Structure formats: C-alpha cells, structure tokens
Image 1 (cartoon, one colour):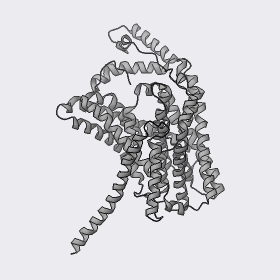
Image 2 (tube, helix red, strand yellow):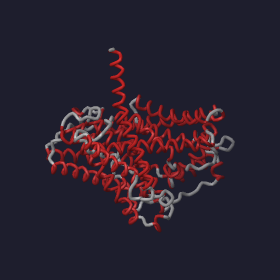
Image 3 (cartoon, rainbow, N blue to C red):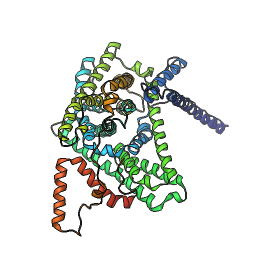
Image 4 (cartoon, rainbow, N blue to C red):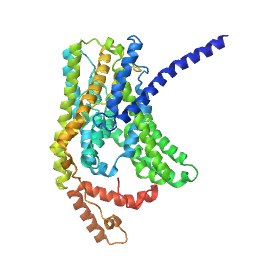
Length: 519
C-alpha cells in the first residue's frame, strides 16, 4: 500500500511539472503566431513581442493565483548558460557574414572589448555614488559585477531595422560588437568573481586584464580547434554517404561539446562556441551533403530563435513577480530614482567609448577608402544600438544576486528588479524608437551607397607567400612589397595573406572550394 501511495505521489509531482511547461510552450506558440502577423511591422520585433506577451501572461497568472505569483517557471541562471545561450551564440557565429566581420575586425574589437573596459568602470563607479544616496550598500565585488552586467548590449532591435545589403559596414559593426560584447562582459564578470576584493590595489586592474586576455585567447583557440576537428572528421569519413542525420548531429554535438569543455575548464563558452560556429560554417559546412547544408542553417536558426523568445518571454513574466517587489524595501520614488540613474549611467558609459573609439578607428583607416569611415550619423546609430539590455544582463544579475532564482535579502531583490526594469524599459522604449531614428539618420538614398573593399585578383591569390623555387632576392622583394602594403592598408593586406594561406593549406585539409571569398 505504501508503494502505491509513493507512485501516486511521484505522478502528482510529475503532473505539477508538466502543467507549467505545457502553459509556457503554449505561450511560446502564441508568440510565434503573433510574430508572424507582425512580420511586416518593422516597429515591433520578436523581442518586444515576447516581452509584451510575457507581461500580459504574467498579469493573467497573477490574477489567477490571487496575487501570489506571476510566473510558472523558476529562472535558473545555470539553465540559461548551459541550455539557452549556446544555440544563440553558435547561430550568430554560423550565420555571420565572415568577409565583412573580418574586414572590420579591428573596429569591432575596439567597440566590443575596449568599449566594455571603458563603460564598465564608469557604470560601477556611478552605481557606487548613486546607491549610497538611497541607502543601498553593496560589496565592492557587487559594484564591479554591476559594471559588467549593465555593459552587456542587446542589438536585436537595431539589426532588424538595418539592411545588410544597404549598409554592410554599419550592420557588420553593430552585429560584430553585439556578439563580442556579450562574450567580453561574461569573461569580465567571471574575472571579477575571482578577485580578492579585500586586497584591491594598483595591480588589480592589471590582474583583471591578464586574466581576461588569457580567457579570451584560450577560449578562442578552443573554438577554432573544435571547428577544425569537426571539419576534418566530416571530410575524412564522409558521413553523408550513409546518413545526413549523422553529419548534422555531429556538428550540433561538437558545437555543444566545445561550449561545455570551455565551461569545464572555466573559460568563456560564448567565445568558444562563437568561433566554433565561424569555422564550422567556413569549412565543415562544405563537407556535408546539399540537403544537410540547407537543414543545418534552418535548424541552428530555429534553436536560436526559440531560446531568445523563451528568455524575453520569461523576463516579461518575471517583471510582475510580486515576491521580489515585496522584498524590495525602496519606496516608489526611490525606485524610480535608482532605475533612472542606472539608465543615465548606461547612456554615459556608452557615449564614453563609441565616439572616441570611432574617431580612433577613422584615424587608423585614413589610408583606406573614404566610404569605410564611420560617419557621425553612423556613430549615433552604433551608440543607440548598444543602449538596449537583454538576456545576458538578466542572467548575470540572477547569477550575482539570487540563489536558484530567489533573492536572499531586500538589497539583492532590488538589484534583480532594477535589472528587469532596465531591460524591459530599454527594449520597449529604445526598440520602438529605433526605426524612426535610423530612417531619419540614414535615408535610403545615402544608405544605399555600399562600402566596398578592394577585390583581390585571382592571379594574386595564386602567388605563394614564399617559394623555394624562386631566388632569395625575389622572395625578399615580395616580402618587402607585402610589408609596405601592410603599413598602408593593414586589414586588406592581412585579409589577402589569409586568403592565400587558406586556399593553399587550410581548405585542402579541412574542406571548402578554393578561391572562394569569405561571405
């Protein structure tokens, strides 16, 4: 009899888990339908749609539960980092236009890496000065973590309005910075967690920078290795002759394995899986059957889309979590002061690096064509694109200020609710204003002037970097010409050298047609 009651109890627990998941999946399906109906409306994207539907759903659940709770699933930051984030970042790397990304790699790294190191201290210092006026006391590590949390951008709204064919330079900068920024903020956040806050001195910044460079380089190397190993295995074994399912499964599992290995070795899984995606699309994608090529693009995009919608839907529901609001002791006006102060710090921190680094990038690219420079209108769009906060900010805030999704004290509850409000406000308000701003700053007539890099001739691609069949004087003269060209046009020259090395050594080993430009 006891066994029967035990089985019945287990069935009851299972049923309790099935009900919320069923409701959540139903709401996800509803988001897909509404998103389809609003496809032609460039004012509203999937992120805004999911947030609004999440808020409406949370209100309904709050009324049904008679004010007890507004969400049906408890947010777990480990769930986010292990299951939801990898497909989003991998798809970003797999679908990225590699030619534009690497042509603008230096500027993207300026915005995505140096920019975070500029904005993060500004936000952290501002929070320290601001919160003291409202009686909020945090540890030095919490303030440093807030700098990283609110430096993480979400560029989805801007990318859905920009046209890649009309403004390839601007699109590449906004997209590239968004991905690199997410990776940088997570790496910086993890580096902050390892700091000994009781011994902060002049070497602290150096230690953080060294730790960051180590994580950045090793994570990138692991991602590149995973992409190359996958390509080599697919090329050598040719899975497609028996089953296209196996080759698709291998790409998915190798990408996920690279992410988990990075997390296992305490590296940056975001960077690892991003570069794994880039190298898989550049090499491994050419080693699978035609049907698998079509399937992989749709499968990866679908997984990323569902994960993003899931996150924003939860954020909308969590905004009405009455437990966190009750735990927070701030009054209404003080709460508004905290939220407004954080938004102002985000605006200032963003402006502090976008405009100076854009000027620096233009100075370093004076020898290239004028069309590759970042105009003032472009700088405003780049600044605006990074004002929106998204899923990474939410996940890092939950990781820093909650225990399995539950804040332990009023101060932590205030930080979580502040992050949720900032994400919702920035996504809705800035997201709605993105289209009219870009339409005003970049009218179609001026935006349609495509920026183009000089093309590399097929004859130049066939030239070796060095040849043992030629005299030393000839090789020396070629190296001298290459060095002069590197000084004049560094990005173009590095790209041409990489193309020749890629065609001569990499593609024959790992797959892909020769003399095929990065796209």
